[in-house]
Length: 401
Image (cartoon, rainbow, N blue to C red; front, side, top):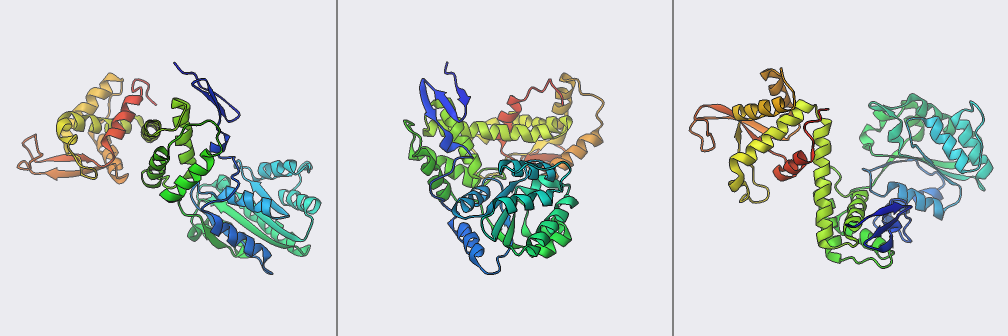
């Protein structure tokens, strides 16, 4: 049995000590790959006479924070305020302390930021990044306080004669900026979008290889890297092109096998897919999750041999709603879930349909897949059958949530 110990980015695998820090999100590459165009836009903007303010958008894991960090290293008087919680005040206080400026009791956050700038800036050309502003959101909009503070900062920097730009880093689309951000702040900043698209398969491969080359004594193959890059670029279930996910898969493979081979990468990816569907099921009400599991189990039992012969992209075979309900009630009884009416089951089914996980249609009794010999509703699974099956096997259904 192999033991793995994790501490400060170091993993000991199979008696071999490997420093995996280059595979962490905090590692700073010697050269920025695949985001040089965005960095160039920011640098050119800084040197203009009237710098603009950017709404920097893109999903997580697409290099937004890394690009801002490298921009900071390449320039003077750049400040990054990371919104690490829903409290803007806390984020600003942490920013001040990192810059060796002690916030005063009940000091206004915009005043704290201005004090940091006045004490630390060497010139009159200032760039400010507010990173991960989504953490400040209350429902569909940011906190009103954030907009007020942005206005205060903007006005005071203007009064003091600074040439400045303020950039907001977010996962939200620019078309929603006016709804998401306080109107007065949006009108002052007059934001322009700077988009970070998902990394392509080729870009993910280059980025992974760049990092792996900095890990001494690690055995890894280009075949494994290509596999991870292809999977993350195409099959990441809402995280397509996410470099953080690619790093997670690589670290998990090395942690298990002590090296990055194709076999290790495939195992790590399969485990990740299973965990993803476990999370999806766990986010549902227990009875609804059990209903989806019952559809999965009924499909496998009814068509196991035929399903093995299906080509990729082909639809699964339909199963009878009456048989699914029987299976669900049997499973529900086994875990002590009772007194659920048919109309409740039907509402859960409708919800699964709206989520595009299943399809439901009535089949005539003469239809080739109608095995109940009566006109009836049949359910066809649209999500991946085996991924869901492995997830259902990983859940302890005796522990209801």
